[in-house]
Amino acid sequence: MKNQYDVVIIGTGIAGLYTSANISNKYNILLITKDKYIKSNSYLAQGGIAASSKNDEDIKSHIKDSLKAGNNKNNIKNLNILIKYAEENINNLITYGVDFDKDSEGNLLRTLEGGHSKPRILHYKDYTGKEITSKLFSYIKLKKNIYLKENTTVINCKKIKNFFEIEIIENNKIKLIYSKVLVISTGGIGQVFKYTTNSCVSTGDGIVFAKNMGAKIKDISLIQFHPTAFINKKSNKNNQCLLLSEALRGEGAILLNKNKQIFMEKYTQLKELAPRDIVSRSILKEVEKQNSNDIFLSIKHKEKLYIKKRFPYIYKKLLENGYDISKEDIPIFPCQHYLMGGIEVDENSKTNIENLYAVGEVSNTGVHGTNRLASNSLLEAIVFSKRAAIDITKILEKNIIEDISIIKDLKILNNTDKINSINNTDMDEIKKEINNLIQESMFVNINIKKAIEALKTSKILLKKIDINISTLTKEYIETKSIVSIALMILEEVVNNNDK
Ligand code: SIN
Image (cartoon, rainbow, N blue to C red; front, side, top):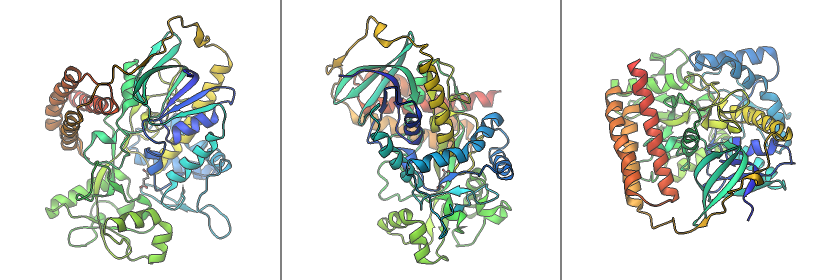
């Protein structure tokens, strides 16, 4: 059994896959994911990828819009890098076979989303994330130096001398693997919330591993809410809400109150196309005013054929839930969507721990400020993963990391004993309690009183997990991550309030 790699990447969203694709073929890379590779936030991404051309004016306006959406709290150096390297990386994706929608003359089609002063978002229908992820996956499957472990849960990561020791559960056995470089690309933390657009794997494990190794975590309480999630309470089994892409509003969809009247103009001149934080807060103001949670998204004024062609995924998913978006107004509500903060990294995605990198949503490059501009996330994933890959190749090439075989006490653990039967009911209860606490204290506007109480309860829950549970299973690891992330978020909120 192979248990030594040059690079281990935890997480198989666009950031993880693109990093692996761009590291030199000379190096052995292992990609690990808890589930199937398709379970990621990237795969679910609908709207698209904001990508300006290299034209100076385009670059300037994209930077300006990102700063405005981010409330001028963005890291300027990294934001410049983000926008400057957009086109180069888009062309790179196209060489991997990624398709974007084009007009009849073959020109790339660009759409609008909230906060964008001009159409610059490339898309593939309403499943851009799936298109990019699956093409990247096909590309890396052909590479002989890249290995993949699906359905493999990482329990913990440690830095030992110059190496990383990664403890995993694979086929119900605990194993240890070693790498010279470790890349964390585990995505978001949506499962900490009661309602989220995030995939079921988004429990924040990577942030917990990084923190345990001494990596700096920054702005973990900077959470973005998507204004338009469809919440079907009847069949919502695992708190993952169906996203109704902002591209719908970019293509003319409007928001309506309970009396089916437009209302956004009361709150912002930009109406439906204001940045997300403004749209979400406006919806909540209208909810309070009308004393009802009934808010709708409407695009039924557009041709049915157009809707089916441009938004086939949303059309089909809503139909499965009993709604025809070409004929009806669709009930929506804001819902947790994205983490702006995370593992602090530099312009090459390096953390403060030597040879530890973080890419994609889990990382904090600072490009988004306090509120991400729509569709800048996939762009961040590719631009900063490419930089990570270049940096990783450089350090491996310099041969400054000694060979792993010098670790004298290299352990090959293949232990089934540690895995006992799990009490999933306990885990479910704890998870639900955290979901309710976080939802109440952190939903769109922070409720500091509730956050202080939630912090106390989360500390008790973390102790309860440590004391009562002797099992090492995926459910245990995920629940522990959820509680730990909740604690980090609440501690930051309470500390910021005390300042
Ligand atoms: C969407 O399609 O509305 C989501 C895009 C994003 O998160 O930027």
